[in-house]
Length: 363
Ligand SMILES: NC(=O)c1ccc[n+]([C@@H]2O[C@H](COP(=O)([O-])OP(=O)(O)OC[C@H]3O[C@@H](n4cnc5c(N)ncnc54)[C@H](O)[C@@H]3O)[C@@H](O)[C@H]2O)c1
Ligand SMILES: CC(C)[C@H](C(=O)O)[C@@H](O)C(=O)O
Ligand SMILES: [Mg+2]
Image (cartoon, rainbow, N blue to C red):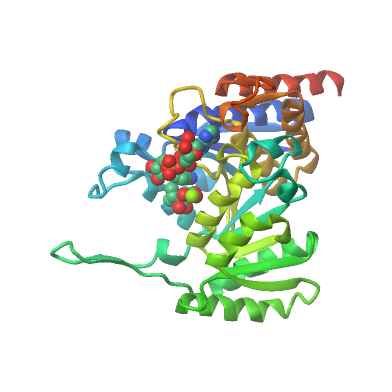
């Protein structure tokens, strides 16, 4: 299979981890005889420094022409510490999602048995958890009108949804639920918010077209609690942009770390694959970042973007093997024991590639 992949490393730990997602794709191409070609582009702070824009036109053009995008992360402490700055790295990410029509962000909570101990939640609560989040990605308070009064003392962000935006992601989530355990939990705040009442009313309508799927509606505050109390109760979770952003960072603790969760953003055109984590200023440049979320993002690209299930499974199985053999990055190692071989970002990346190469020899 021939594919043209755009790599956008971004800022902070973005480049450190994305290099391993890309190398994993190169190795998969070698093993299975695919022809993947790569191009690279700037976004976020890295792009602002060079062009003054968080999403240069050239990046958007390259993105539109590619078959898939592997993204790292954007963000820089400079902007986080100065809210008055008008041009911000995050604007690049939001714009590319909107421009490419990436309205559905799939965030699987993939729980490796080996990492049951890495979570702060008890293993018996976690074991068997398998959740797929559908986070709406191009609407909500993220894209509604923003205002600031002249005296700067009042600000607002409009939380807005149109019925069609809820319908299209609801269909995707129901179709996924039909292929899984046939349970869908829609999370909103319909007891307070009008946009959530539209959300719930629309999901109730769509649910009638999927009678084989059991639907539950839950308020966001309760969902945040249930996710920790009994994560196994969830199968597909369908939710709005802001709620999905927050719930999935919370859910990363089910999988053991932010460094373990990948995502696929899909919709109208080219798929966009990225870890759920950010540029992590606290560990950037220290060889401490976990590259597995980027490699798992590459696996999602293979599976969801290109329909290459066997190739995706090989990546996931290889990560499983690495973990079974006791290798860990700092974020998933239990610091109180010496049971694990703790590796830096590059060592972990190289090890996954080495294990993949051994598959090449034995295949
Ligand atoms: N998709 C994105 O590009 C994205 C997502 C979230 C945050 N951000 C941006 O990133 C910057 C930092 O934000 P934040 O600190 O709130 O969130 P973050 O996700 O960058 O980091 C949160 C915590 O998780 C840890 N962590 C994250 N990824 C890790 C990895 N791969 N391995 C090990 N530990 C990891 C970090 O060290 C930190 O303690 C901000 O500028 C923010 O806007 C970008
Ligand atoms: C950086 C930010 C704009 C982004 C979001 O809120 O969507 C991030 O937190 C994410 O989860 O991808
Ligand atoms: Mg987030």
